Each structure stands twice: as structure tokens, then as C-alpha cells.
Length: 446
Length: 188
Image (tube, each protein chain N blue to C red):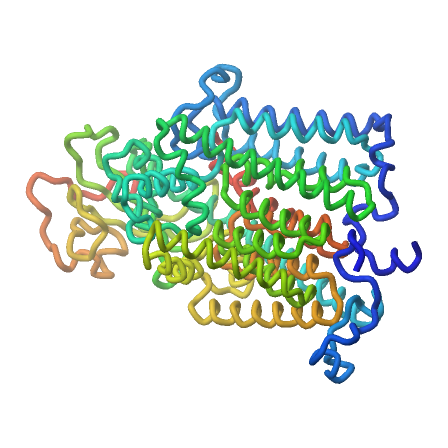
């Protein structure tokens, strides 16, 4: 075990707990039970208030949670942010105790939290309505790689698509558009439920892969399950908005699981498939190739690329290639939550300028090159991929909460504890940056 | 490599892999790192900590800046209501994005509840200075006819500093039937 322990990757938290220990824990400490109840309670309050309807935190949405109406009051910034802080603190406490939590309690907790958000209305973002619009466009023969949702002006979903995205062509891969197609013929509310179910499957797959990876690595799977499955941004912002990043992450974790099972071709194919869901997943491929140097991996990736590109061409013609132009377009966006914007403000600048975009891309390229070199020289490719995804999120001027989820499951299964701490710290800072309404006069008056 | 590892089994370079095996030692691929927590690990950790510190400081600074801006915009709306004597729900505040000063322009309808079918003229105030008692100082202002966006050609009825600054240079007389007197609460 000595040689193996030195070379084998450690689980993110805590690495001294070996396989079976978490599952042998029969009595979870009362403090951990109390923290789990705080998680359920604070998330329950958010969901009940969200179900009451009109809120600055909810996008206009078809009414989905009518049966919960009347239980809470309108979800305002103050109660939401207080619940978010309480949830995050309880999450931190539970993670610290996670090695002593029984598998049964951990699974029950994650299922309860996920179920609460499953029945909630769509939270925070309008993206899911764009997904539905693109799938409906594809079903009606309108190419979503050529036209924006404005082409569906008379469709009932149109009024729910975010104002900034009405003319935007899809930035998602043809595989995602294809996977979303079965949702297109459904009614308005059913299609939103369809997207929620799609996100739920992605969550379940990611958690199952994370669990399986831990078992294959001979470590306790419970901490990993809690780190990912009870994460506030994962739940409220990611699953709460039914974001397709979750599906991309599921493909990524599928690839890691296949690698551990020495199924290299499948792993390569899974990463490429993830890239055809959302392009960010491709960031893992160079690290995988450098570390494994496997012909079967390369063949699997190439076969999946040919299959997915062929599928894209068959369905959307050469316009599928416009996706690259769209990705270039999206990389020029700026959000107020982006760390580069915050840094620019710190330097007294009003925001970031085109030259800053270039500097950030150069910085990101240097980080990726360094990580590739480290991977070549024996560093864990999973950790390197996680660092690369974290670097993409941190250097992106267009940062959204669900981007900080990309490295999280990788951080959990990698040998690199620093990556997990860095990912959780970045998520913590993202949450801190959301708190301004808590201190402003306008929110205090409402 | 055994199942259950993400790195590899041995820190030694692979042997017998053709071209890769012929590479000089420092360039040869390794199956696992030679040392886990050596000098490089310490340098990386220091760099990461410094980056974390910078990002944390930037985040907290930006949070306080956002709170300040939010309070300023709230004070702008309250000042507009106090100066005009109107209690409109909808008061739009435009920030000075040309020179990034804190001089804001707050505009609202001159009637408190215009019907959906018709719209009224709007009165705008130029607001400057720090927030004191949830108010800011109104330097001056102008009117806008219905439906027009803020634009130099459409302003009329300037009062206070906007008069001297030539904000109403394109429209020296007020359009007939529209209000143009400075609000009673303006003591510029």
C-alpha cells in the first residue's frame, strides 16, 4: 500500500478515510444531523417563497409550482440572501464533518435537497427557456445555429426567453440540441418539466460517477457526494436553473470513471460527446491525451468527433460550424460578477476593455500550457483539467455561478486538495459578491 | 498502471515507447511526479495564496462599491421624488457612462400615474455629490417631451446648472401645452 498510496490520487476530503469507512459509519453525529436539517430548512424556505411567484430572483416563467403557492411570501433579496448564507455556512460545517456522516444520511440529504429544487420554479436565470426555444426551432426546421429565438416570435416560449438572448444563436453543441429535441413537442409547462428532468438525470449521473470514482480509488465516497450534491451553487444556481452545464459535467465525470475502469476509448468518446454538449468540456481532452498517451483514447475521441460532427452536419448543415463564431462572440461578453471586472474596479477602471480580454486570454493560455507541461511530467490529468476549468472561470469576464461548478467534481476525485479548496473559495467569493442587496438602502426598505 | 489510479504506478519514465523514450530526461513524460510536495509545490501554493488574496480583496472592494452605487441610485430616486413632489413608482436613473463620474440623471413622468394609452412629458434632474440622509444635491434639470429618449435635441425647459451648460441649446422654447417650469422643490 505504501508505494500505491504515494502514487495513487487522494480523495479530496479527508484522505485518511479509506473505503468502507464511510459506509460503515452507522451513527452520524448529532451536529451533522442538525446541519443537514439547517440545509433542508433554508433551502425549503427559498423554494416555498419562490413558489409564491413574482420575485426579482425569478425569471418570468410558466406557473409550475402552483400547489406550493400560499405557503410562503414573495422571494425577496433579503430572505434569499440570508437563506443562502445560512445554507453555505451549514454546508461548510457539514463538509468538515463529512467523514463521520453515514452513507445513508448523506444520500437521504442529497436526495431531499435535489427533490426540493425539482419542485421549485426556475431560479435566477432564463437560460432554460433559451434551451427550449432552440429545441423547438430545431423541431420546426428553423436552424438554431443561424437564427435566434426571435424566429419563434409566435411560439409561447418566446416571451420567456431573456431579452438579451432573443437574437442570439445557440452556443451549445449539436448533441445537446439533439438530446433536447424530444422536449420540443411538449406543451409549455411540460417542456420546462422536461428540462428539469434532463437536469435531474445529469445531477444523478454526476453524483453516481463521483461515487463510483471514489470507490474505484479506495476512498470514502460520502464526502465527495456531499461536496458536490449539497453544494449551494450546484443546487440553487445550477440545478435550480436546469442548466445544461450539469449535463456537460456528467459527460466529464463519465469520462473520468471510464478512465479509472481502463476503458480508454469510451473515455475519449465521452469527453468529445461532452464537448458537443457544451464546448468547455473539450478542455479536458489535451490533459487526458498527454497523461494516458493511449491510441485507444485518441481513436475513441476521434470516432466520437466524427460521429457528433456528422450528426451536426446532417441536422444543421455547415452552419453547425458557426458555433465557433458564437463562442468567440460569447467570450467578448462581460458580467458584473466576473473577477476581471472586480479587479478592474479595484484598479480604479470603470470596467474591462478589449485589451484586457486579450491579456486574460494570454494569461489563460499560459496557465493551460503550464498545466499541460505538468501533466506531461506526471501530474494528475484530472487535477490539471480541474485547474484549467477553474482558470477558465476565473479569467472569464463573463462569469456565471454555474461556471464555478465545472471543476467541482474533478476537484473531489483528484489527488489535489488545493484544487478543492480553491474551487470552494472561488464559489465562496462568488456568493460574497452576490450580497450587495443585503447592505443597500433599497433592499432594506423592501 | 493499475485500475484505481488517475496518475500512474511508477514515477519513472516509461520505457520502450519509441520516440518518447529517446527524449532527454527533463523532457521525457513521467507516469507520476517524482516528489509531491517539493519546492515547486511550495512556490505554486504561494502563488495561489497571493492570487486568492488579490481576488478576495477585489471581491470585497467591489461589494462595497456596488453597495455605494446602489445607495446612490436609491438616493437619486428619493431626491427626484422630493424635488418634484411626485411619488412615481417608475423613476429611471441614468449613470454618466461617458466620463464615469457620479453625476446621475434621474427622469420620471410629470404625472404620477400616466395611463397606458397616453404618456406624459418627463422631468429630469441632474444629481451630484455624496449621499446625505438618503438625498443628493440637485444641480439642475430639464424636461423631455413624451416618448423621446434622452437626447440633446429633445431637452427643453432647462433650469439650474443645465441652463448654463447649454443642455437646452437645441430647443430654446418649450413645446406648446407641455410643462416647463422648474419644480417647486428645486432650490438650485
